[in-house]
Length: 74
Image (cartoon, rainbow, N blue to C red):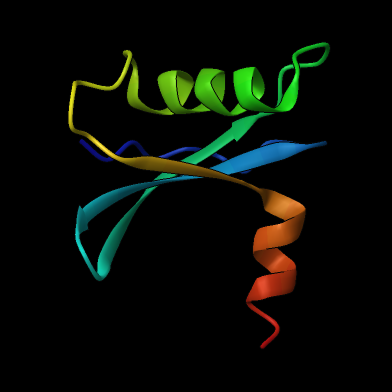
């Protein structure tokens, strides 16, 4: 499932889903929820982007948008 999302303002996560060993699909960008520790914030971002909790065996990544932009510089 791919959701079209407008780029949120402020801190946000870019959420990706692993399709196979070398392929990732961009799911979308979601705002970072304040007050959550890092792991919980990433898990919440994945649930927000997909609309549900990940199914067993599904693999996702949530990368801070600021880090995503820096990584694209290289």
